[in-house]
Length: 337
Ligand SMILES: [Zn+2]
Ligand SMILES: [Zn+2]
Image 1: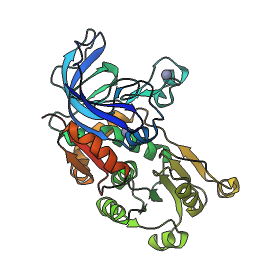
Image 2: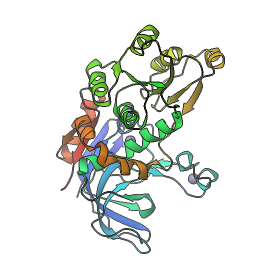
Image 3: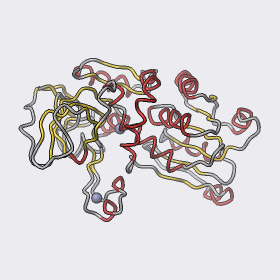
Image 4: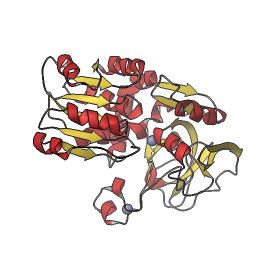
């Protein structure tokens, strides 16, 4: 079968590999139907930071149909449309036992510590497999994982009713946070992104205003109301520093982007304004809730994304996306019907 495998930084190959054999106890085989390219896939491709096995079939955002079931797997059937939980957590450590599987002491990700979804088939432990509504468009079903990441960030931010929120960065996670907030929250939304046309697209889909990271502009957009809550989905230390400066007192700033470099921050800003900094890593139990939200968000999600039709397109898409050449928030590859 065809698989897209990462050998090293900047070395991604489309190859013929053996299909998974019949799954061992507790595992299932999934025929992949659609998979999404994540910003973290691109980060790993550029830097090699998380390569722990060579080669490794990349891809942790995907959906597919269960095609074989190992012994002891009870709640899945052949033909089920399923999503994968990207987090390969141990289930044994103190964090896992307390339910915080996203900060597992041995956490790895599908597509790094085991082969992922940029292939015709993938084998996974059944504990990492979640059922979808069978009629869901596979291109939408493949977005369950990033939607769970966004939902986790929104829940960690936990803005009180009516509070305005600024979304810094209108890529996948920033855009999905905006989309979720437009459904789950009643305060005004502001969007900031260096790519103005992408910010406009997200703001018009989510109902909000585009601003730059400038206090007077934010005030004007809010009709003089205060801005206390923010999500950074850029990981840019410059944007984070500017975003913190933007906030009035008594709120919170959620960090969900992968950063490069160190933050130059005057902690007195946090102290004097009582701003909480909240780190958000992957998701805890949000995948099932994200899956349940997908049918309602389907049309917006399709407008957010571009769809490619072959695994062969992935290396070119990695290069194009790494250079920022896209106006969409998510690139999905349809692998099979
Ligand atoms: Zn991802
Ligand atoms: Zn663990």
